[in-house]
Image 1 (cartoon, rainbow, N blue to C red):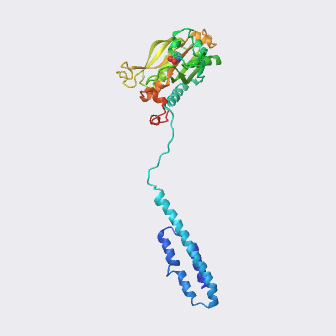
Image 2: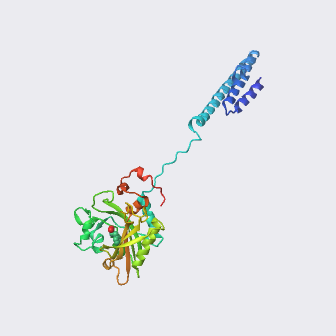
Image 3: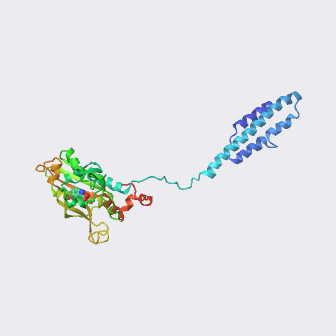
Length: 340
Ligand code: PHE
């Protein structure tokens, strides 16, 4: 009998199950009334008294072993089945991870930088809190020039010499002071003007300044550079038009228009039925400005331009209200894929 107890003990130990049916087989084989362990208890009745005592203990241990094994097999089956049936449904679609994306103004800024970098322009930076000299005087704005009024400046702490820059042209002067020609740089940044906020104007917005100073830089270089930019930015079919304009720091000056992307020149409300939309101010750097930047205008010439990032973004994505850019409404921001 001892021999048989050993064999049963080993098979209880090594029994493994993966389904409820197999677990039931375990119970029937060892623990049920007609199972092997109760059968041994029956046999025990006929054993000699001194044998009975010894074997009874061994048999009780075996029964305990089988009951514990049954419990642990049951638990393992329960935990497996609750995962597969209650918690994970592998046929469900995956919940996509929420990832952030770039602000549309940054998408446009990166695209502008990419286009000009390929033409050999590098990127420069300058301060947003500026002094009068770099924002106005060095750029050939006379002391009482009405152009100063045009810019609706925010002054800092009632000191007329410290202001929030009204354009990125302030970086032009700093760049010329710090670097000898050839200079080929673009300067993106935030600018401020004391204007009433509407769908078309804001008290802060973003510009990209461009400056190219070298020997023999001509107006044709300006025109061709901006024509290339317009085609890269808005598509190969885009045309440009230069309109005479005025800025104190460029002479001659021109406003750059592109053919309307919406109606392709036929006339619509975006281009106010003219077929053209303005994207930049530009011109040949005024000799006074070169001089103020420490560059000899007899030796060098240059062109400069300044474009509004909001305006270009609005054209690019057909956005009709400038205020959307600064409201941080996720319903708006979520629509822009992070592809420059
Ligand atoms: N600074 C001008 C503006 O803000 C744009 C400009 C830049 C024009 C450079 C000419 C040359 O309107």
